[in-house]
Image (cartoon, rainbow, N blue to C red; front, side, top):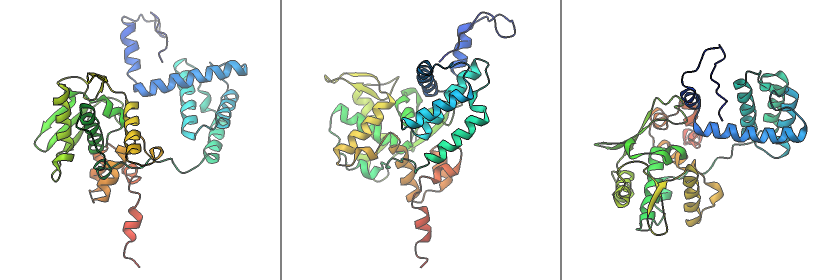
Length: 314
């Protein structure tokens, strides 16, 4: 989503490089956020056309009606919140008061949250214990898939982070390697974050570092995207999308006889947190490894913490 750039700015000053300004404005948000805003804004415009309402500026009453429309379509709270955010963002860029700031919309959103309040749909954790049950074939595809899943689990990566890893992001260290992420969900300003991947001390066959090296060597990849597509003829292609990571997790679950609906792209990250916490790794270390800004976020993955604390009290 990009607003139109003219040769004169709002203060009457000439813009020496409109293209650079456009690029800088795009960099203010993650690509995923821009895509969500564009998608939600288009959907809102279509609804406004049918309702005979103005999308920009939009009245609080019109936004309220649209949010109720989304409830009627069975949308989840998070989806409705995202739609509200997108509409408000578009108004801010155009210099209008965001309709979501009105008490009317705030009250309606509060009611929607209470009405749709439900237990979060958490996907099952996919841990190394699960992965050891997977029979990865000794093929190029098998080596790639094994490396993706082991690195994804060991690093607690989000699927977008995993798909975006480049060879240039990898740094060898005595204990394994470090993946230097130039940007992530918890690092919107692009300061960079580092993720340590340690070698397996007990099982070389399931070592994430070794699996990654095997894949890179077999695929003859020495620069650019680490995880790439493979044609039917065995030719290595372009960088995989984050959706592909999601589909791979589903495919592995189905192959192993598990319910695919219980697993998703977040299962690897959840599996890393769950596995480390259950094995007594200090909470602050797990939180740091997952790049959580708050320890409370990490605690959500320790689903048996209360039960473990109560063991033996009666």
